[in-house]
Each structure stands twice: as structure tokens, then as C-alpha cells.
Image (cartoon, rainbow, N blue to C red; front, top):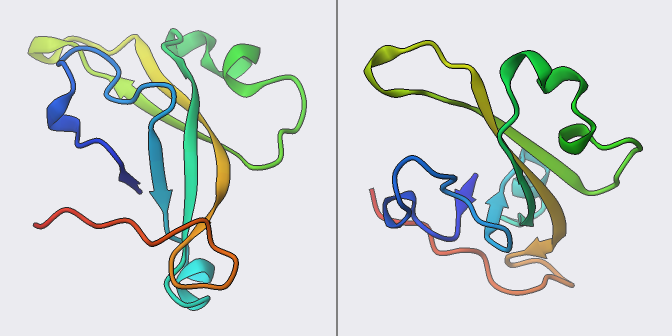
Length: 113
């Protein structure tokens, strides 16, 4: 996954993603289709307690949502304290970008390194 805004530009201790940010995801199938990327837009952010994550309808929704991608990560407190919260983000598929017919635009420019 490639985010449109480098994490180093975001404040520490907060979500490094904001609603409206764009992420690009490449799969084996999209690569085989000529180097296409799937473009997703961040729609919602969550910080549920770990023990409540599995049943949280704000994170998982209450029905199937075609084109939705959910990313979940751990919020690590300083000094190796036990983590008690997760960071989650909902993403909605915006379309396909890259050198393929019908794409929304060019492929993302990847950062060097």
C-alpha cells in the first residue's frame, strides 16, 4: 500500500491518515493487468479498545459494503507499555489508475528509497 501523504508529515501520536487521504494498493491481479493500482479514499477512522474491536459495528459495519477496505493497526504507547487500543481506517474503492484502459488517471509516483 502506498499513501498519498508521507507519514513523516503527520503529527506524532495521532492518526497518520486523515479522512479524504488516498491510498494505492497493488495486487497480483492488478499487476498482471498491466501495472494497474487500486485507488482507495479514506472514509472513516477509529480507535477502539482491543477487547471491543471484534464486535464494534462502527468499525466493521452492520452489512456488506462492496469496495470497502479496512486497515487495522496497533496503537503502541511509549516505553513499551501494553497496547490497549487499535487504530482502524475504512477505505472506499475509488477506481483503478495506471496504464490500463478506462483508468481514472496515471499510476502513483512512488517515493524513492
